[in-house]
Amino acid sequence: MSILSNNSTDPNKILPMTYMWARDHYKDGVANNWTPEEISMQKDVEQWKSNNVLSEVERRMILWNLGFFSTAESLTANNIVLTVYKHVTNPEARQYLLRQAYEEAVHTDTFIYCCDTLGLDPDYIYNMYETIPSIKQKDDFVVDLTKSIMDPNFAINSTEDIKKFLHDVVGYYVIMEGVFFYAGFAMMLALKRQNKMIGIGEQFEYIMRDESIHLAFGCDLINTIKEENPTVWTEDFKSDITNLIIKAVDFEKEYAYDACPNGLLGINPEQFCEYVEYIADRRLERINLGKHYGSENPFPWMSQSVDLSKEKNFFETRVTEYQTAGSLDWD
Image (cartoon, rainbow, N blue to C red; front, top):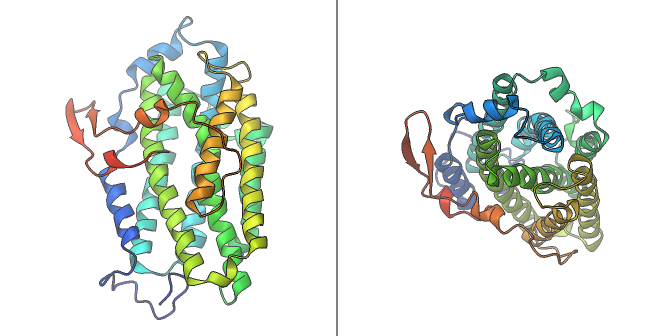
């Protein structure tokens, strides 16, 4: 039995399970359950309306990150529902994909919540994928990676088809969720560290937790497909995948310079780029490819800021435990 396109699979028979890693990721997702309305935005509104809290560079950076993430999340959700779920027929893996699809809906709702709360122009935010070149090229790059897979007639019948599917999974899990999100995460959490836009910062922390689990699932899926279909993982194909990730890093670096050209709160654009290189090396290693950059992590606080066992629920002023999710590796 294979994880891909097994026509004999009865989706109602989730037991006995074959891929316990998929079940573990599902449980981790449940442990990190959240909704945007749980997080107070009152101070964010006050700071946004104030003329002496946020600089113009900070305001622009916030808008750009809201603009990129608002459309990137929907692209990822479409890929899960329209392609990955169709071809990954193992029941416990599908159970996780349903959980991830829900989380993508929560993320999309988060940006609706931010726009509504801050009184932002939704047309301006949601059209940035067309109006901001460095955002557009990231979205276009991922969409272009998956054109053949999104064809409704695509089916997995050969080694070449499996390669195409792997190409798609790398595009969304490793590149979109594992590389393209991380300069933005670093910017927003750097702002939060200065007690600016705390509510949005906390929402980005929760999103980063979710994305870390998405990435872990995606890498386990990639590695499982490779193990079950060893002939696809040729030297040429590994080189192609590595080059895709390197190209994605270049796009993310360009976005980092565009979104925060003069630095932010003592952090220069070069450090954001170094962080993306560090992240990319970890992604390459996770799917058994060698490091390319050898960069150190300039932001060790990125893990510290989200690797928490407890978070305060602002509506109920109580402490919520995140036992499993609190032990995850968030980079």
